[in-house]
Length: 179
Image 1: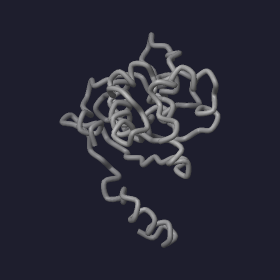
Image 2: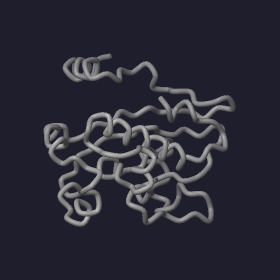
Image 3: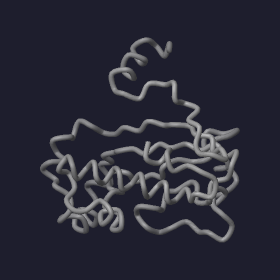
C-alpha cells in the first residue's frame, strides 16, 4: 500500500521500488532475519537477497509490456541499467505518466543460488541472521500483484477486488479460480 499511495504522474518508478525495498527490509528486521536500519540495508542492497527482482513493469499488450523491444525499452532515454545488486533487474525506470498501467508486485523469495552464494554470504554476514532465516526455510517466496492505473490524482488499483490475504487466496485456489 505504501507504494500505491505514492503513485502520481512524475513520480519515479525507481523510487517506488526503493520504497518497497525499505518496507521489505523493515519487515525482515522485525522478524529478526535482518539486522540494522531499513534504509541502511537498502543502501547496501541487503534487501536484494530476498527481493532480487524489480517492483514491477508496464502492463499492456504483453504480460511484461515492451520487453521484446529491448533491454531498456522501459527506461527513460539516457538511462542505463544499474549494475547494483538491488537495482539491476528493474524493468521500468522512468517517471510515471498519466495513463500508464503498471504493476506493483514486491515480493519475498528465498532463492537457493542467491542465499548459498559464498560472496554474498560473506558480504552480508553481519546483517543476516542465518539461523533465524532457517526457521522460514519452508517459505520459498510470495508475491501479490496489484495492477495500477496512473491518474492525474493518484493510482487507481484495478485489481482491488481480488483477495490478498493468505486464507482468501487459498480458498480461491481450492475453488478452481471461481471468484
